[in-house]
Image 1 (cartoon, rainbow, N blue to C red):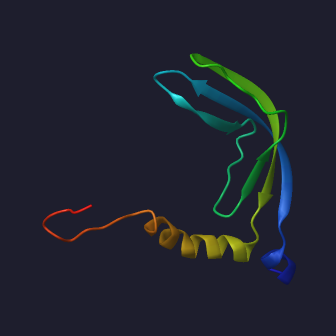
Image 2: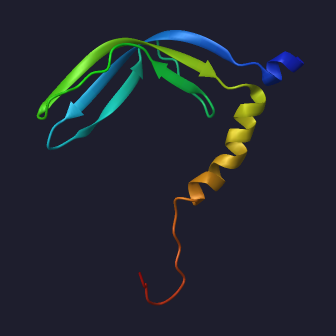
Image 3: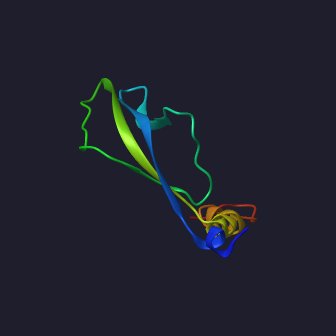
Length: 101
């Protein structure tokens, strides 16, 4: 592997489908790449197109194009190595018998 491969980022444009749910049962947005490509730790995704607003009680689907910026080999390794530590910042542990807030 060359030095460029260790530090260079690559980009690819892919078609995608964005599904937005704004109902009582479900609130969320889901992105699916239409060509089956996946993302890995450290990758960044930018979805192109105008902002959308889905009224309450509705679900909408939009066809868009996304740019995936692939992490370099070093960035991917760093993300994998430090990801667990960042997750642990979200956790709160208590080892006492009574919880006090």
